[in-house]
Image 1 (spheres, rainbow, N blue to C red):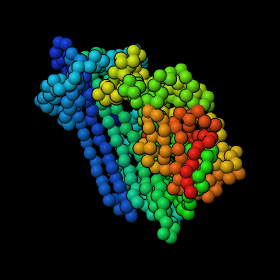
Image 2 (tube, rainbow, N blue to C red):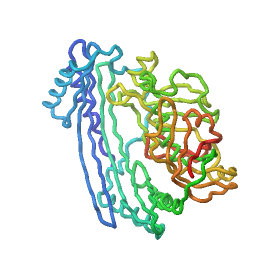
Image 3 (tube, rainbow, N blue to C red):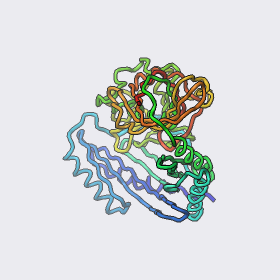
Image 4 (tube, one colour):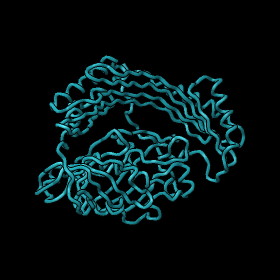
Length: 448
């Protein structure tokens, strides 16, 4: 039996707030309600359990170019009135901004998606605990050198509604769950760490065996690793590493970064910025994406945007604010609050070959399986990056000895141009970017 969708109740609340707008005001109300579960298991026993409910409302008022905001963690009618009054009071603290304003309906239809699964809502607490325990058990059974740091189950369900004086009226709900496990592999005095995860709209979609297997592999494969010699080398980025780089690149492909002078892609629209093998899209309408959604943070329809087409920069993602400043249409990528823009579900269109097939064609290279400190090691304006890394050497088409304690350095611009192959091993990860193996030539590796 399906559970009732109560998000329409939240929309009624939001509409009541918007109806209280004074002449000359723009008002936005965002109303949400949620339920989450967090379970942590250690040595077969529940170490941590939290089941939490929440509800909140956020109100934004814009008048004469000034913006005031306020929020609270209750939907009590008297409290909501105070939140609106406080948002109006906060108008006086903001500086006038000629571009300030709420999003307006742009005629793009919402892509219907199945973001809610009734079976997850019906899953018992005992079943959730059993899943976390099973993940720990399977992981420990994978290798005698493995210890489990923690095994976790988490889920979340949310309903939300947005209404504005500019005519936006949307409401919906979504839920999902995931498992994760942290591992340590011991060999004498050496210890390496690893992790595994599984995500889904319901517990039946969780691939628990794969999560356990990957947690074991990630922890054990670098045991006995040494520091490699410094040289320039062909690298193969593992899908999880590629996704981490994509998250950074995505942060520079938005209008907000461009107008603030923080994007290495500023003033390069229509130019070749990557290998012709690369097509990069932001597509939150793909139901396979972990961060799939039907609307953005401003209540506009989420949509598929091609950012780099065959190596050519074709679009920046925009919020209503950044689009207004750049004189462009919004792309449905606004964040809560309206001023921010961001990619929602990045994906490189995959090639055809598996990682094993790619490796088989490389005589001398390295498979990068881990990077450390990537976000702090990248300059988003210049594109320079230097990051610690670990992985496996590639010799004559075969994976060889593990290596660690070295750095790889280049620029994001050079890395994108030097992409020699895009793998066909697309992986949907629990983050806003998917992963795929990438082959990049002539990367500086600094080791011994």
